[in-house]
Image (cartoon, rainbow, N blue to C red):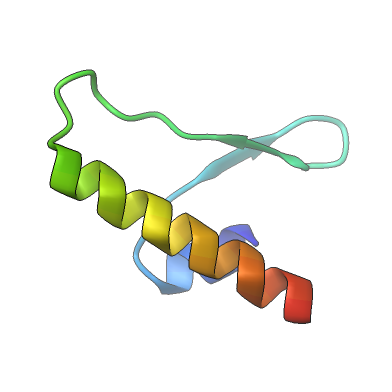
Length: 52
């Protein structure tokens, strides 16, 4: 899923023993539009990963 997000322009950090934890590091002052765009990309990436 991290690769799918990267293809769409969203950089995610993964962690955990199995790499199954997503770390989303956004500044406190992130504009709502940027956050909404990131969440949309994340949703698309999860959906694409499910289909694989």
